[in-house]
Image 1: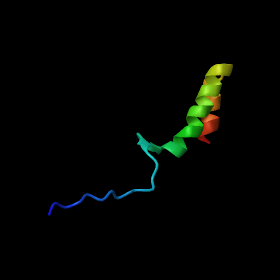
Image 2: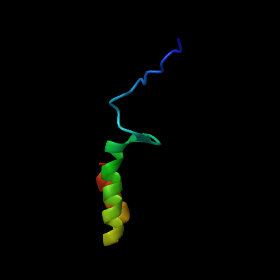
Image 3: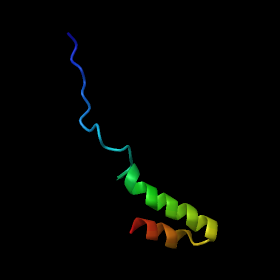
Image 4: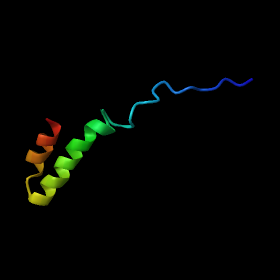
Amino acid sequence: MKPVKIPRRVDEPPHLLLWSADELAPMLLGLTIGVIIGKALICFLGGYL
């Protein structure tokens, strides 16, 4: 019988670099809005905090 690989983290959202998707979403939303209004850095940092 072949061993079955069981994932260790079933409930965790996907990761991108150091952040999970739910942590990255506010930063990307702030960056997107900041690019639209011309204040990308300020909005990105606001999304980070």
